[in-house]
Image 1 (cartoon, rainbow, N blue to C red):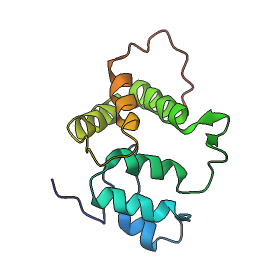
Image 2: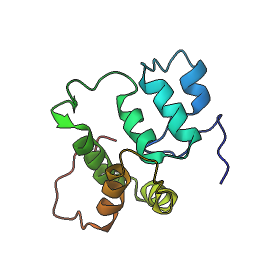
Image 3: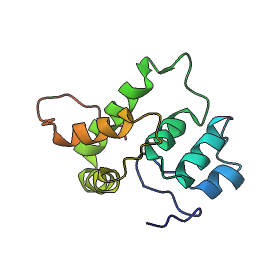
Image 4: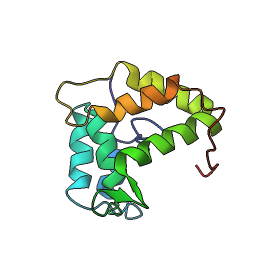
Length: 130
């Protein structure tokens, strides 16, 4: 699979293109996360790319984003996408399903996304903010 730097690798969890990180003044990527994102995308280490994406704007403080850990935030977003954007979520799951890379340092990230895909969310209250 060949990825273009001009397009986001995937539309939900990796929704910023490499060119956007490098050149778009509207994307204020902070370091080292901008470089980490680009390197991980180029190396197809998508777990690490998602991890960097959640940190890229500098809003992770002491491992937390608005009272959630990064992993909890990823899980919450996955549930929200699955419930409110099921077709896009199915495409994301298909993209990541065979993309495990032994060089990834955060293999739990895609595991969370794939685990949420198998869950029945019907009894879970999920805010509709995507």
